[in-house]
Structures are given as structure tokens and as C-alpha cells.
Image 1 (cartoon, helix red, strand yellow):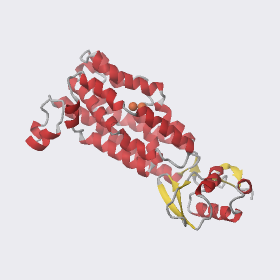
Image 2 (cartoon, rainbow, N blue to C red):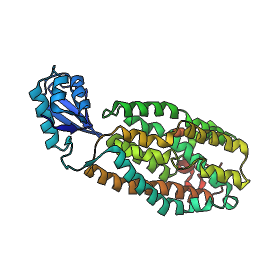
Image 3 (spheres, rainbow, N blue to C red):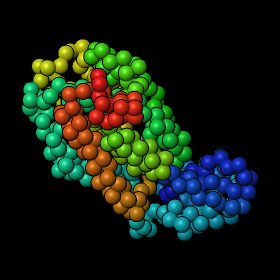
Image 4 (spheres, helix red, strand yellow):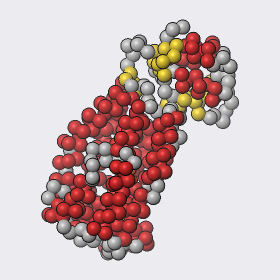
Amino acid sequence: MGDMYVTYGRFSKSDDAAVKLYVVSGAEHEIQNLEGDYLEWNKVLSMLNGRHTISAVCEKNKQLSANDIHELITALEDSNLAFKVNSGADFVSGDEAILEIEDLQAQLLHDYLYKNKFWLAMQQPETVPENVYYGMAIENYHFLFRESWFDSPVLNFVASTKARLIMNEFYSEEYGHDELIFRALQTLGITRENIKETIPLPETLALCNALAYWAANDPLFFFTTMGILEGKDIEVDSFILAMQNSKKISTSFIKPILDHANINIGAEHGVLTRELFREIPVVTHEQLKQMRANTHIFVELYDNFHSAVWEHYSTSSDLLRTLSGITLEGAENANQY
Ligand SMILES: [Fe+2]
Ligand SMILES: [Fe+2]
């Protein structure tokens, strides 16, 4: 057979010998009665990248039955999990998909995020209340403190070994970044005990929770968010520039935050999304549609996060929202710092 196929799912280890687990974009599909080791089958799947004919795949994997290979490909094709090359079927490459999503991201960021109160205020740094700068750092600390929630579910991304390695490297590079921000907060006299008592704004937690959900259930979409979160478009974070230009914030506070931004630039975390999508051969139009819908929600959550920082910290003279303040003495006494 001269047909060539594309698929990007992989089998993961199954506890039940009679069942193989085909995992693609976070979803598991059970395949019954497929003889042979799952790792052998993954060699077959890795050749279904649109560059090998089925007969070549069978030839290279003689330890497996050619009949079973044909049947698996047919079953995957019937379930829209594998696609015949040049069949006119509905899919694009990962590279094409991410370009389309980045377009939408840029448009939504421009229309919503950069027009919210927080970013508009940053254009006049001297008029921004000091606590907004400190508050952004506090919420950023909370976000980074929870980064393992949303980075860890994709560490075992089985669909692509290369993408998995990229994510694992990124994970180790991100470790401890909350500590960098904490160093800035320490210059304000905030102690570890203080920060332990502090709770994030609901909008900060909402962003963390949504990202953790997507990472676990829709890793491809999660990958699209990383470029934005890691500052793809910004050379030096405009928030840091605003702090510097405000003439209100000490350089000892800014330094650790700047160090963090420079780590992102040095390690090229901003281009991570594109690197990951380069490893994804197929994105179906159905997946792309879902990603577009989720992009709207993600930008809204990201917008809410910045807006909430502005709303809360520009109006509150107290900096720390403490758990004991809220639970023991009522919300109005929450910010005693
Ligand atoms: Fe980081
Ligand atoms: Fe980073």
C-alpha cells in the first residue's frame, strides 16, 4: 500500500494486558486485543508522520503482524485519530495551527488586555499608586508559587518525545522562580510567615486553576498559553519599565523581578510554544476550533487577573490579604500589614 498516514497519539503503559491505551491530546482511547508490546507499537505510530508508506511501516516493524498494523490504522482513521496524507481531510500541521492561534491571541490582547485599567495606567507610571506595583509582584508570587500545578500535568506528554523533553527542561528551569519574587517582597519587610498567611486574589487563583485544568485535559491548548505567560512579545517586561520610570520603587525591589524577566529572555521561554507545536504533525480543524474558543476564555482570564490587581491594590492601603484576617476578624480587617 502506498498510502501515507499521520497521527500523533501514542500508547501509554496499561495495567490491563488485554487493553492498550492510546493517548492523544490528553484523551485516552482504549484499544482491545492488540497483540504485542506497547513500546513496539509506538515505533509504528512514530512512523505515521506522513513520510512513510504503510508497506514501509510494516517492513520496519516485522515483529508485529502486518494485518494488525493495517487494522490499527483503519481503526484510528475511522475514529478521526489518524489521517491519510493528501486525502483532503480536515487537518493542519502544528506550525500552521499555532500561527492561526497566535493571530487570534494578538488581536484579543490588543482589543482587551492592553486596554484594561492596569495596562493603560502603566503608560503613565508616575501616576500609578505604589501598592499596585507591589500588589502585582505579590500576585505574581502566588502565580509562580503554583506553577507546578499547571506545568506538571504535561511532563508526561506522550504524543511527542521531543515536546516532552522540551517541557521537562522548561520545568526544571522554572523551579524556584517564586523565590526570586519573594526576594523582592522581602525588601518591603514581608517575611516568609507573612506570605504564608496571604491568599491570592480570586482572579489569580482562577487563572492558575484554568491552566491546571487545560494542562491535564487539553495539553495542546495549554501549550498555546505558554508563549503569552512567558512574555513572547516583550523584550523587557513593560511592567518593569513602568516601575523603573515611576521613580517610586527602589532598585532593590526591582532587581530580583528584573532577574526573573532576564531568565525568561536568556532561556528563550517566549518561543517555547512554537517549539512545542513544531513537534505536533496534526491538529484537526475540530481541535483548532476548540482552541480558538478557549483562547477567548484564556485572554479574558488573563485580562481579569491584571484588572483585579488594579482594582484591589489601587484602592486598598493595605498590602497583604491574610487568611487569619478574613476568617477570624472579617474581610474588612483582612489587610493589617
Ligand atoms: Fe519563571
Ligand atoms: Fe520562564
